[in-house]
Length: 219
Figure 1 (tube, rainbow, N blue to C red):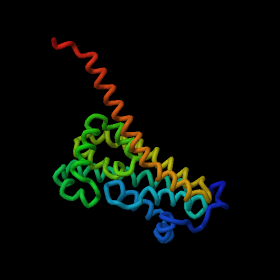
Figure 2: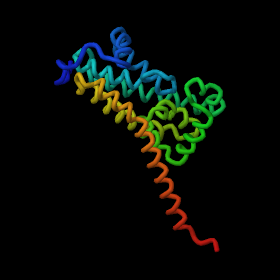
Figure 3: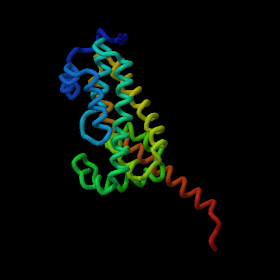
């Protein structure tokens, strides 16, 4: 089994939200990682990202295998988003509007998200993986907007691979600094979401200006 070079420094018990998930990993191991990540990725508000990080921390102590944590996390992420895609595709907007409030998907949020997907679907699927809220809803919204399934699977797999690689690496190599690192990362996730939104707005504005510049003068 692979062990992190920082394994000796990784605490056996972790504070805060990470500590609250220890019983799940202690009792169910890889199954807990698979279940939480899958559920989060089709809209159920469970800490899938957090348990992925904690699974990598456990791998750093030699209690799990980091390659299996990463592989299971990747497969679960892809599966969860595809379940979300099926819900959106076959259930449609009416189903999501009826039950979405239970997982914080409001009609207003759905309107904004579907607009982005219709214009920038592939890129949004990749970026959404790192943004709280969008990560849980991107499969559902892609299904509602009738994105081609093969295209969704491709971009979803790319986003899932990057997301799993980042967070398993953070958990595996962070040693006894994991709680500080995780708290800082989640603290700035809001700024990341704002920055991503600003970049998308600037990109859209740039495209609109270029299109107007190339359109013939109607007069």
